[in-house]
Length: 220
Image (cartoon, rainbow, N blue to C red):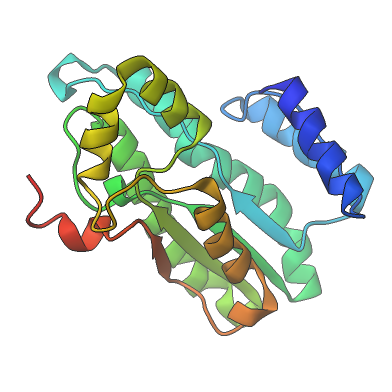
């Protein structure tokens, strides 16, 4: 959504010798997803790897939520992945190879008060990923999910700036490793699952969560 940051990423990719194609828009918008995929195909031909990495979160107690809240969260967090993968998968199947890495969340496994729609959308992502692994693994396309804990994404950096030490303490407390995760640490897990090093890995969830899920059963 940020043209300046998109241009910076494009320039960094090109400095590393890659060809980069960037499009800016709202991935919760089905029309933009279709146009983004069409633009990518025009630039690159087809995708060998898809990383479904987009998410929004908003704390709303369930009794105060409405359909619009749920539809907005699911449109970005889950339906974007469904729509984009549906468009790109046929070319992978024709080639007989491909990897799809979905970004879930530890909150898709255990609850966090107020984030019921977010948790549900990430739980859906994991279940959907396992289902597609079953449907398409024999045709050469692998589906896996990375499960981050509380990570210093731009969204969480904004929350940290707004809420300060209280947010950092609350987020760190869910981890066994007593700090917030770094985006690079999640990216390393994604890169592994997308690579040929993971050629025999499909239908799994790789935890890059600082031990959140292990700790969750006794965290309070």
